[in-house]
Image 1 (tube, rainbow, N blue to C red):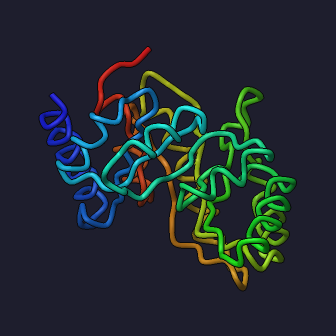
Image 2: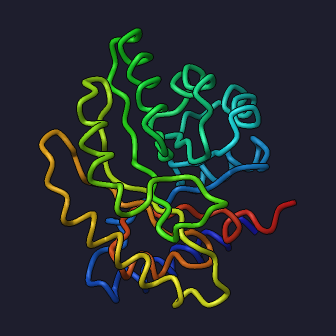
Image 3: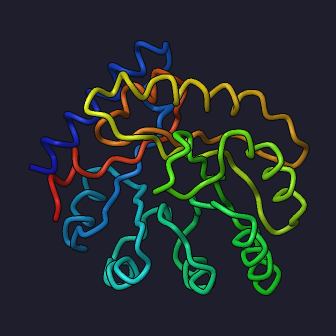
Length: 224
């Protein structure tokens, strides 16, 4: 089933990339593996998926430790400041920098480790009270503040979009964030990644400028 699902996701990505006029290889597929056992993650890795995303640290760490393979791990969930140290031990990209307090804590950890921490600024593009992230009008000032931390490297933006049954309804949100993304010109900000789109709407996200999608259900099936 996983192999069949992966081929379908790749076909959907290819069609969306073609509409935008880019190669499918320009889009990074992040497999969201929350609640997925380590055996399935290993199978997905063997099928060619190298990027995986987890949003709950306590669930992710045992799987990461058990896996004989070492994918590129993305932390995509709300990160509590007291868990920052543990996340940095296993994850290469934090997609969910959603507040300046977290940036301060990450900077402290980066100083202790003498390392650079790659992050995406999380944007709540639908201004939903139930979701974390900076509002679109806060993005520029937030980036200007985070870039002052020498041990944090901002690689781009991550979107939390509203859910609609019709993915076309999300298109204006993706388009707005892409315009913000392209308009950012802050020294020290390496604006390369725009992480937008999940199972229900990743084609629209790609058409509107996303170069990284986070897909779980379409790969691993429905989960509890």
